[in-house]
Length: 251
Image 1: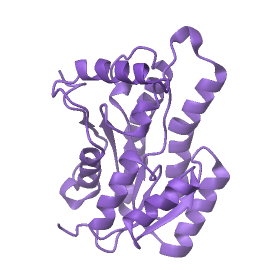
Image 2 (image 1 turned 60 degrees about the horizontal axis):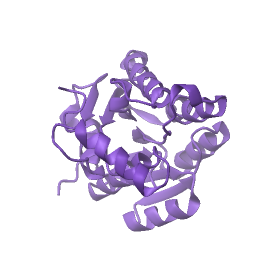
Image 3 (image 1 turned 45 degrees about the vertical axis):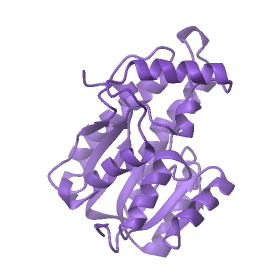
Image 4 (image 1 turned 90 degrees about the vertical axis):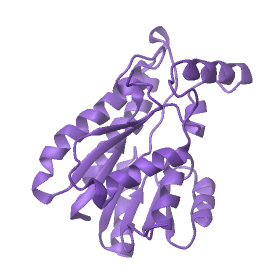
């Protein structure tokens, strides 16, 4: 395996499971020191131990400004600078229009919009010129999905952030891109549906019907796209949305 990120510092929010964990493992394997965050301390600690000595776990909720301040204070003390920020923390659940509540809206926009905005803002003083910011979007931000309107709107906002921040940060040479997974086998995907087998099976069947490749994605496949966007191979790529979706939003 190449060591494209030897000596680099990567901060990955939502790094305890799923896409964030897979990405942190890949960065570490390619030489980076990784700081991973999550809200569940036990899962986060286990993830860091699985990644190895180059991983540091910091319990933090990206929707809490005080947690973000504490996160980047520790990263600054331990590493001094950041080369890559992968803003992956977020999530949501399915609710039809008539059932949406204020709490549902506040939770999803807090995690997927407010958390993304302030994670990037708080990282900027440590982020090196020429660094890379990668945001986790979703195919849901571009296509209609039944009972997923709030989540979909939050991911459309993430896409909009990348366009504007590309311009805001161009003088520092910082590239901002979005990786948008399709349906991927992660705890977050199955968390969209109620926790009963019938609902989970129905969700999977509905998702598979819309994927031209006929299967769900793997977290490591999304991780590969993130590492590409962070690497020198993507040095002339900024402001884009890279779909890793088996063709779902493409045909």
